[in-house]
Amino acid sequence: MMPSKSQTPQQLLQKLLLFFSAGTLLTLALASYAWLASLARANERREAVTPNSARFVVVAGGGAPSYNEIALEKNVLYFQRTLAELGQSASDVDIFFANGNDGQSTVRYINFLGRERFKPPEIAHLRGAATAVNLDQWFQQTAKQPPCQRFFYFTGHGLYNETNPDNNSLILWKETLFDVQDLAARLDRLPPEQPFVAMMAQCYAGAFANLIYEGGDPSQPVALQSRCGFFATVASRPSVGCTPAVNEADYRDYSSSFFAGLSGVDRVGQPVASADYDANGVIAYNEAHAFAKVDEETADWPISTVEAWLQRQATPQDTASILSLPLANWVAVSPPQRRYVIESLAAKLGYDLSEPYPAQERPVQANEVQVAYRMRLEMELINVGITQKIQTSGSDAQLSILNQLTECEASSLSGPRDPHDGRILQSFQELQ
Image (cartoon, rainbow, N blue to C red; front, side, top):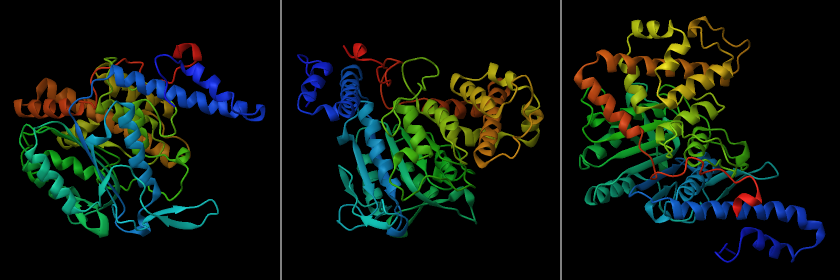
């Protein structure tokens, strides 16, 4: 049943209530209201949003059934809901998950009795398995199509490369490895005018920030093609979020926070505070990333391509100098999304903005989340400080790279929209 121009959500709700006994009225009313409000919000977006020509690819799942957790499948489903919230079509998404469509029970979960079970993947529009062959075919097809933004989402497992931590790997189905240089080699074959944005949520994900370099090698030049990405954590650390538990309300991970920031709706359908920090009516990728740095209550240290590049430019002397100044100095020169991160993390840690970072006491008996907040704050201060240094005294080459990466990360999935879009309206009157 869909709302029409001749029937308001309230009228539909009243009709539904006529079919049920008084004992179920309250439960039904609450559930129906949430459903109708969601439909109203989605319909408003379809009318207000003009989708861009972006296309999306999702690569997901574990390398084998033993670690192909249901949370990874649910991440894909949440991404589909996020795109729907933003007015994007399911036909614009190519999804490759674990074993694909062969019908085998490979998704691991824990049932309500606490027992391990396996089931087949249940993902609409699933194209096939998460294999290197399918990825290669996708890149080959992409190279033949007119250039438009390609958004690459990976949710799965990663492997640390002890010999070369700049070249960590994704673990694809049947435990095939696909490393940074494998990905960059595919990007190098695309037309230079083909934009590429990645969001990757796996252990050791930060190494994939090296996709900005030719061949994925930091010793090589930054590619002319617009490439950028956002990663759950730095190259040297594991990440969180792979669980066989089925209750999404308990999920705490980078995917959950990033897509909540991007769409304005969390993975259980509840509204979140707007991540439109520059108040321009559009949630950019870097704003969703900023939202995740504050929202995500885990041990992760999220990082992006420009941030990884900035931190490569920082000398130990630069870092010491940046951290020696009061936090307020960096708040004053930060772009809106970085200002939000500094102020919010400082508040979570109980820090005084008038004092420098090293002078602030570490939380007593800090847990891993508080330790992560502190590291995220330190990283953000360095991001702002090195940006300022390059903008005032950097070389033309540095300025060009900084601007290219910043522009890529400030892009978005959708065109301009109402900055308040993404909230569930607070009363039935607001739905009229």
